[in-house]
Length: 88
Figure (cartoon, rainbow, N blue to C red):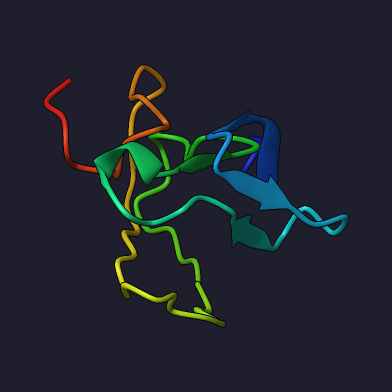
Protein backbone atom coordinates (compact mmCIF):
# COMPACT_ATOMS: atom_id res chain seq x y z
CA UNK A 1 0.00 0.00 0.00
CA UNK A 2 1.56 3.30 -1.13
CA UNK A 3 0.89 6.15 1.29
CA UNK A 4 1.41 9.87 0.69
CA UNK A 5 4.91 10.78 1.88
CA UNK A 6 5.85 13.93 -0.09
CA UNK A 7 4.51 16.47 -2.58
CA UNK A 8 4.07 15.60 -6.25
CA UNK A 9 6.32 17.88 -8.31
CA UNK A 10 4.32 17.12 -11.46
CA UNK A 11 0.87 17.72 -9.96
CA UNK A 12 0.86 21.32 -8.71
CA UNK A 13 -0.17 24.84 -9.62
CA UNK A 14 2.31 27.07 -11.41
CA UNK A 15 1.92 29.48 -8.46
CA UNK A 16 3.78 27.02 -6.22
CA UNK A 17 7.34 25.80 -5.94
CA UNK A 18 8.64 22.82 -3.96
CA UNK A 19 12.03 22.64 -2.28
CA UNK A 20 14.56 19.83 -2.78
CA UNK A 21 13.23 17.85 0.21
CA UNK A 22 9.85 17.65 -1.59
CA UNK A 23 8.25 18.47 1.77
CA UNK A 24 8.12 22.29 1.73
CA UNK A 25 5.85 24.23 -0.62
CA UNK A 26 6.32 27.93 -1.32
CA UNK A 27 3.62 30.17 -2.75
CA UNK A 28 4.92 32.43 -5.51
CA UNK A 29 1.73 33.98 -6.85
CA UNK A 30 0.56 37.55 -6.36
CA UNK A 31 -2.21 36.66 -3.90
CA UNK A 32 -4.44 39.44 -5.21
CA UNK A 33 -7.32 37.55 -6.83
CA UNK A 34 -8.91 34.13 -7.28
CA UNK A 35 -6.66 33.59 -10.32
CA UNK A 36 -3.66 33.61 -7.98
CA UNK A 37 -4.76 30.48 -6.08
CA UNK A 38 -2.58 27.41 -6.05
CA UNK A 39 -2.83 23.81 -4.90
CA UNK A 40 -0.64 20.74 -4.90
CA UNK A 41 -1.30 17.02 -4.55
CA UNK A 42 0.71 14.46 -2.63
CA UNK A 43 2.80 11.81 -4.35
CA UNK A 44 0.16 9.18 -3.55
CA UNK A 45 -3.53 9.38 -2.61
CA UNK A 46 -4.74 8.24 0.79
CA UNK A 47 -5.86 4.64 0.18
CA UNK A 48 -9.58 4.04 0.78
CA UNK A 49 -8.75 1.17 3.16
CA UNK A 50 -7.10 3.68 5.55
CA UNK A 51 -9.75 4.32 8.15
CA UNK A 52 -7.60 6.99 9.79
CA UNK A 53 -4.85 9.07 8.21
CA UNK A 54 -2.80 11.65 10.10
CA UNK A 55 -0.85 14.55 8.62
CA UNK A 56 0.56 17.85 9.86
CA UNK A 57 1.03 21.22 8.20
CA UNK A 58 3.20 24.04 9.53
CA UNK A 59 2.37 27.50 8.21
CA UNK A 60 5.70 29.34 8.25
CA UNK A 61 4.47 32.57 6.65
CA UNK A 62 0.76 33.38 6.45
CA UNK A 63 1.28 35.87 3.63
CA UNK A 64 0.16 39.44 3.13
CA UNK A 65 -3.56 38.63 2.76
CA UNK A 66 -3.56 35.65 5.14
CA UNK A 67 -5.59 33.43 2.80
CA UNK A 68 -4.62 29.78 3.10
CA UNK A 69 -6.68 26.71 2.35
CA UNK A 70 -5.82 23.15 3.34
CA UNK A 71 -7.95 20.27 2.19
CA UNK A 72 -8.41 17.15 0.16
CA UNK A 73 -9.40 16.88 -3.48
CA UNK A 74 -9.96 14.41 -6.25
CA UNK A 75 -7.58 13.97 -9.16
CA UNK A 76 -9.80 15.98 -11.51
CA UNK A 77 -9.87 19.15 -9.35
CA UNK A 78 -8.25 22.25 -10.93
CA UNK A 79 -5.02 23.01 -9.06
CA UNK A 80 -5.31 26.71 -9.86
CA UNK A 81 -8.27 26.87 -7.48
CA UNK A 82 -8.52 26.42 -3.71
CA UNK A 83 -9.70 23.07 -2.32
CA UNK A 84 -13.48 23.04 -2.02
CA UNK A 85 -14.16 26.00 -4.34
CA UNK A 86 -15.57 23.86 -7.14
CA UNK A 87 -18.12 21.05 -7.24
CA UNK A 88 -16.62 18.10 -9.05
